[in-house]
Amino acid sequence: MQTHADTQTHPPGALAGLRVVDLTQMLAGPFCTQVLADHGADVIKVEAMTGDGTRITGPFCDDDTLREFGGYFQSVNRNKRSIAVDLKSSTGREILRKLIDSADVVVENFRAGVMERLGLSYETLRETNPRLVYGTVRGFGDPRSGESPYAQWPAYDVVSQAMGGMMGITGPDRDTATKIGPGVGDTIPALMLCIGILSAVHRARGTGHGQFVDVAMTDAVLAMCERIVYQTSYTGVVPAPEGNRHPLLCPFGLFRSRDGQVSIACATDAFWEKLAIAIGRPDMATDEAFATNAARVQHQQQVIDAIEAFTTVRTKEEIAAVLGGKVPFGPVYTAAEIFADPHYAVREMLVEVEQPGSARPVKIAGVPIKLSDTPGAVRRRAPLLGEHTEEILLATGYTERDIKGLRETKAVR
Image 1 (cartoon, helix red, strand yellow):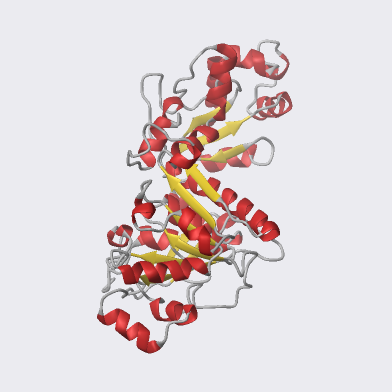
Image 2: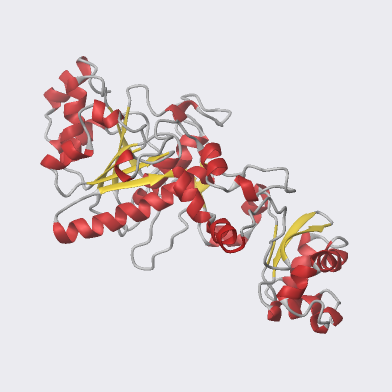
């Protein structure tokens, strides 16, 4: 069975010709470089001799005989090539330096100071590659952009969600902060870093000069929670968890159905009028207690009760038949419902790839950014550890004899 992992029929992508040396691990960094790879960049994933730590993280297919990597690694490392290098050795560091000298971009998410200790700081690298764009994503940023008192604190998604303000407005009530389900404390900073890198690449192509691009995970999360900043500044009131409601709009949130929940968002009075009629309450469209958003916010519970009188006696499918296409509406989907929905099939958002060691392909999330002339694509599965070491080194100028020697001394795998 041919999958996206073993066919090269896709066009090259808008970033074809952009070479990225990827020194990242876990989620934030790899997600950033994968977005670049999806759109055609040649991303060389430089791994330790033992590999990215997420290679051993599941889930794994039941029949996977290799256990080279599981779903986590597969999901955020597709379209990349892998080379395994011992950066603790001077030979390994020399190899990395040669790779970076011929690259447009290097991305890393080590703690601040690690690359400096390896003798591979941005300032050192730009001496031989002045057009280099050097991207970093760390919990609290790099000291070059402003030294945080937490600069040396390690951080994961849950930390940036907490300190960036996201958890502080999420939860069932004012006293119960709640973690957002997906790793947005990693993926949001990753997307911010993508924007920064591409901005710097654009400038470098015009001037020949690269620059340092720094994203703090906490800063990126705060930027996405922008509402809490202006609310506090304008009113002096500190926002708190709001459950499934919105403090400024009504109705805007989740509502119970017979088989789950649905989302309804009427940010305008025109949408509210359509909703009121659809749920059999045309009187609420003209009643001054509900006719405007400001009035509805003041009488929020009555609005919620009226809507749930309609939704709680119907299934999600039945509600969709009435509200779909009329007002902003969507059922709360499980992954099983996403797999069954034709929207995601026609948009190519569930992509099959080969899983080494398993007899069956697996599905990962597709490319959400759709370009008409140079579309992104899942062109290849995630790489085995060191799968492309030889081809990368040959292209860098090493001979087959050189590579044999490097392997014998365990400088590469």
